[in-house]
Length: 121
Length: 300
Image (cartoon, rainbow over all chains, first blue to last red; front, side, top):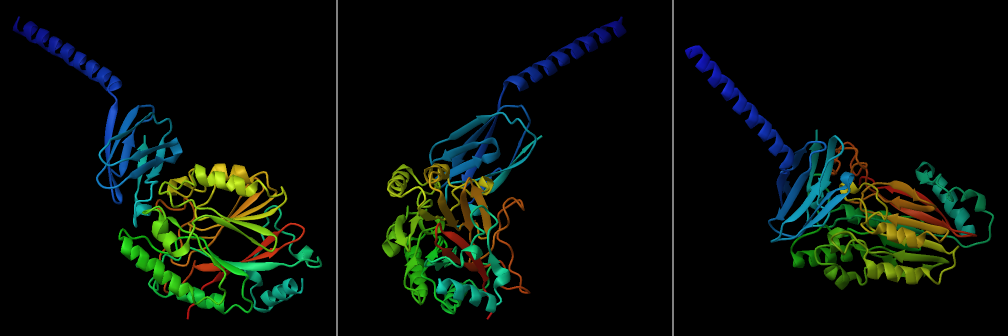
């Protein structure tokens, strides 16, 4: 009897766990990733943005100082980043690889090194 | 014509034959074949990306390289008809007074050129942070045109907008410049950035450059000379040839050849390697062919 009760509890726990996992998976599929990217002379943070193929993502950009640009040419994406505002790009990467991005609004000596990489796996 | 023959002979005598680049691109290989034609040819010199004010390891002689280039051009056996600087005369600074100081110093140094017909244009380092305001105080308009011996030269500004656009107003000006020219007019365009998408991953492009190329496309004889990428490069968009010049401060890597567009390191064993300027010989009939002679900066 004691054994049966334990078994029932275990089964119930396992069932609940399974439901939780399923629910988490559903949420993961429906909740879109949002990645915040902060620009400042002459840096993007993070400098590496890791994404999953076919998983939609929204990139949210702010700048700490002057007007910046974000350009990701291999996906045909770009945004102006204005002080005091948030710029957003929503897209779904459809290819795997490493893709450079850069600031495309000249922002001073060091602008040329204001680059980063999107890594899609 | 004598001038043309004498000049070719000089280049051979000077041992520069190996440095002569005659493009295999369409319309570029007929210079030798036209030696017997009756016309007046000329040549000009292109210098680019001097970045006066730059300091750093990629050029330990940053304070002396520009003067060295002036001396080299002055030492040419024949002086060019004119000289053009295709932008980034100075290295950028956030300080407006320092920017003006650098522009003033640059202007004083190049005043030593024997040839006084010198054409300037800004690069993004000169003009992008103030939309060309300081540049214009020293050098005037950032886009303009001039005629020389049957060739229509057009200087386009694709840097005063920090986003690297030519802009609708200037494109309208370009259209108006081109409109009265016959379809076979000899046209040379000077720009700082490439008008085509060379490598947008490194910002080596002009955001609306395709619109300028579209305006130029109906004209049969158009050649573009530009700077910005600190290396020799040749490219065709349709029948229009585009030729990038070397820098006078530090060379940059070939497009996409390394993860970042960081300057190539100075090599004590080969000082000034990758730096240089060019002569462009215009041989003018019936259509202008251009022959490029790349010249290095020598130690000493």
